[in-house]
Image (cartoon, rainbow, N blue to C red; front, side, top):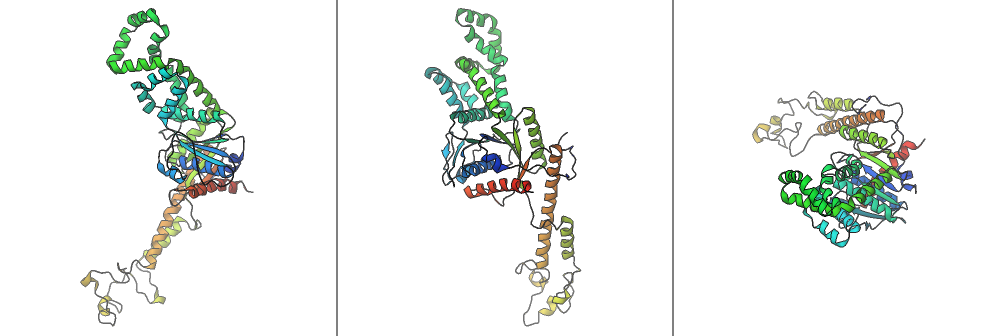
Length: 445
């Protein structure tokens, strides 16, 4: 069953509440992974969780992939890079550090740590390596997992909050280790590694006799220089390939460990929740510990008792030309005749009003540019805005009900939408408070 197939009717029971503070306060929680589709607020959610955990006494590092400077500025840091930097002005006894993944620098650090100086220099200066480390499909996701493994092994922080890379699919973060392993174990890599493994004259004889046709074809396909760059890279990296696979497998097991908690972040929109439902199912299939769903940017109304239908009906009544407020002595707004209150008769009064045809200005009851719209027109406009908001709330609730029908076991916390972007620590605190408050309210008897 998919999200579109789930029953749209409201549920008899609300989904279980996600206790965010209980999750962050638990010393057994060592890694929190925020995942979901792009544009749903993962980065802000990860930063807000890190700040809240730090101000509740944890020593936290937030690993973000978002290159936007606004996040660094909201934390009071000039810039974020591949080194964790302490965030100032944190309340309480905890600490908050933040960093932004530098994909190429992380790859370079791996090479420098696992190869001797001469071989490391050969790899780092290799044109194919430079292209691979900067933009090979899946490299960013794999390097995020490498950096997570490095941070966890240092035992310097008791909580790591990870903002997964933005991508077309939230599943890329889980697929990255397997994808890299498939690349390293692929037929092309084995072919290119064969001469180095055989070695000596036998290897050269094997290469000349058995691979000349293969390398000739590859040379035409890739270009001779590129093929030589690839072969040089593979020969230099030969001893490191096993290390990549080993660390990828170790990090994957770390993500499955009890101390890890996945939070799926989504907006109350059909596409975002469809991807969230798919990711929930994938986490279950991979035995990954799901803590719950963060439903971000949920719209609310302070006048929910006034339905969209009633608001629209009231707006239409106010806009009808036949409405006359006789007690206030106001004429029918639809009356354009030359009655006692017509502009023509007012022309000879002590406070003359120019005729509309002469000056191009509207009558008082029609609303002149100088005086602005009437009270009725403003009220009707506000009622229509309220109707639009109530219709939006109904669509969001409909989509949430579909998700809950498909995954009733998933704990949920809702974060009400803010009127603007988050620009400072106070904004992150507000998000953290809303993250925790929703679950606390739903959990209360």
